[in-house]
Image 1 (cartoon, rainbow, N blue to C red):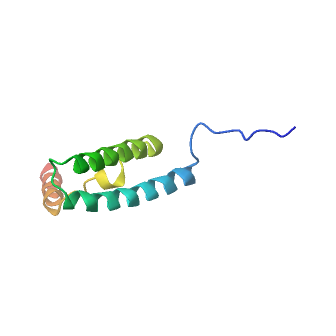
Image 2: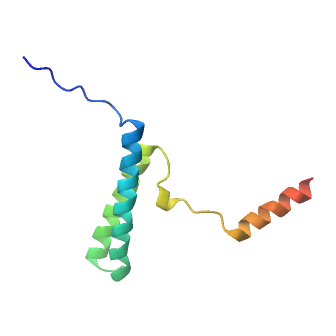
Length: 89
């Protein structure tokens, strides 16, 4: 009698990182199609819905905001933060 493969409740860290990387690449490819379509059309909405599900899956697996949704601080906001720190001292 053969034993069954025991499944884990979560991906290993390396597997989760690989999943996030591949999902980000897929999302980037989806985004190229959105640029070409009118937002009012059914195809646009279908691709957008798929993109949103990829977002949810990555957030669930990585327990973080997907990399493409994280906005980097602008140069302006960094200089404003730097000025506030200097004023407090």
